[in-house]
Length: 264
Image 1: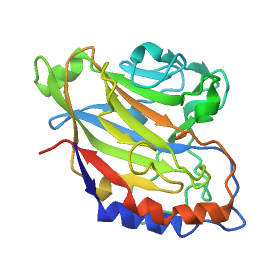
Image 2: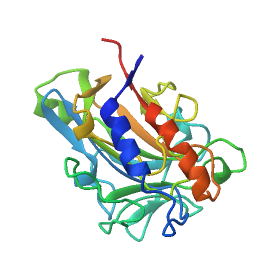
Image 3: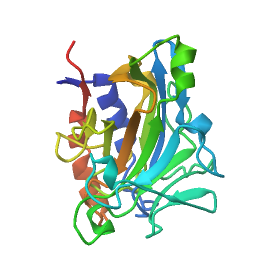
C-alpha cells in the first residue's frame, strides 16, 4: 500500500473546521452521513443510499456490528435489529438508518462543487465503551456480490471491484478523536482501506471526503459471487464530551489526512 496526501481533501477539511466552536456547538454523538457505490468496470453493482430500505435489507445487503469480537473476523459480526425504520444494536446507541433532515450545525453548508450530504447515516455508539471486553465495536454495512452483478458487468469468475463513488461526511458534533472507517474484504483480517487511530489520522469532526475531491476509482481487489465487502464505521475508541477549545486544536491535524491506495 502507498499513502498519498490529497491537497483538495485537506483544503475541504480546513474549510469545514473553521466554523467550529461557536455557542451553537453541542455534543450529541458520533455520526457520519455515509454513501458509496461499488462497480465492476463501468457497471455499478451496488449503491448504498439508493438501495437502503427501512423495512429490511435489500438483496445483497447486511447491516451488522461486531458484537462477538474485534473487527476483521466476520464470525464476530451480528445482524442489527430493525427497529422503527433503522437498524440498531442492543444498546440503542449504535445504529444505521436514513433521515433526510440535515442539521445545519452538525453539517454546515458545503461548497457548491460538492454533492448534497447523504441522507443515510451511521452512528457507531460508544466505541470501546459499547462492550465490557474493551474492543471497539463498529457499525458495519456489508454487501455480498450477487450472480446478477457479474452478469450485468459481463464478467465470469472473480472480477475486480472498485469504489467508484463515496461520501464520508462527519458531524461537527463528533468527539475530538474523530471517527474510524475501515473496509474489509471477505475473511481477510487486514483492512483494504483504513482511516483510524492506528494509521495517521481518522476522519475528524466536520470533515467531508467526497467523490468530487478525488474521483479516481478505488480498487478493492477481485471478488466472486458470495464474497462480501464490509464497511466498518467506528467511534475511533473515544467517547467523551469535547470542549470547543479542544476541538479547535484538532483542526490542523486533519490536514494530514491521507488515503490508502494499492501500489501502481
